[in-house]
Length: 136
Image 1 (cartoon, rainbow, N blue to C red):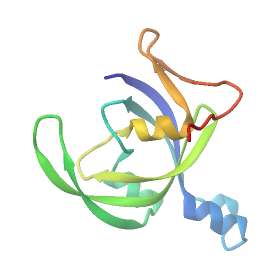
Image 2: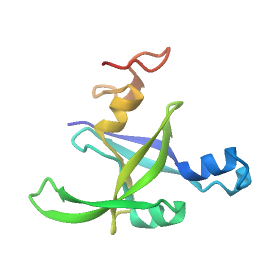
Image 3: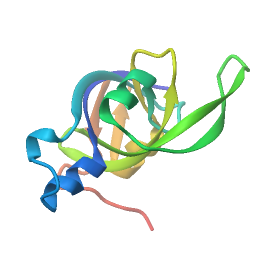
Image 4: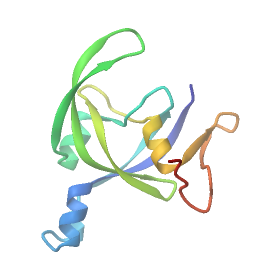
């Protein structure tokens, strides 16, 4: 398992669309840039509840989550989280943790953005620097 610190830009994806069609001004788009941790042992993005509220992300479901220490819990899933780092961006759903203060980027994000972990150098890098390559 790899854990690497990164700066990540989080944006309300619905706000981006509303701004594109003229329903809100671009400066009204809710966004935040934070330090996060890439954890290849985690599947989805995980964000603090306070950040989900600040970004105004819509709740879409609940999921049973399993922690590495054996605990389980029900957690909300929010939608339309635009996540960007290393010049690559996509929209994801995310698990909301009520008492967390950091963002965790899981392997699903790495796969979608075609990024790989260099464990020796402790950094994240594009698998192909010329763009995203998708295996189908």
